[in-house]
Image (cartoon, one colour):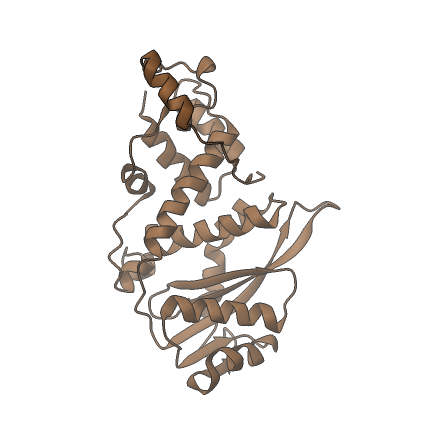
Length: 282
């Protein structure tokens, strides 16, 4: 039987590579003698360890190049039925390092949405680019002017020119197919935004890129991130407690460590109310 840490690491890796929670549960059961891990346990693992990775990533500022490329793509939340709804995902990426500076989700393609994307990227990089390359969508014109002023030149381009082409982010969107698969069945914007933030961490800090000779965008941007995998993120914390591994100890196959009655009473007095995390809706 593999350790709980290995189960957690596998679950996060599979989730951010595009597997649904149902598929992850099935895979873990097949690989571990029908081990039953509940959906809520998987959700808790993903939310908890993604947040740890995000907090560490926020401590580091990437050294990016002078040219950023922005684009948008549509995603349908809640499936293709009547309850589904289209949302727009705005992305901006550094040309030299492939570092994804910011992602923003909006229900419409407006100047405000594009400006929010630019402001997030500006804050992440700590400086303005020399040039911002976009497609012909007009909302970028005012968004770039309002955010960067005269410090940055806006270039409206296509994938078919040699200089300042949008081809990089067009190729990047093929990578985003895994992100689309993760989010397609989601219904709640809050859970979708949390997943977007986690996917950004996986893409920038944990996923090696062939175009970067096996390095991550974070490494290419000069960041010394302490985690090389989700396993490293998990191992940086204390060994998972029983409550984090099983929702119901009475149905678990493993043996829960015993403790003295006084210790149980002491823990009961200091126990805090449990806050239920938002569901990932998959």
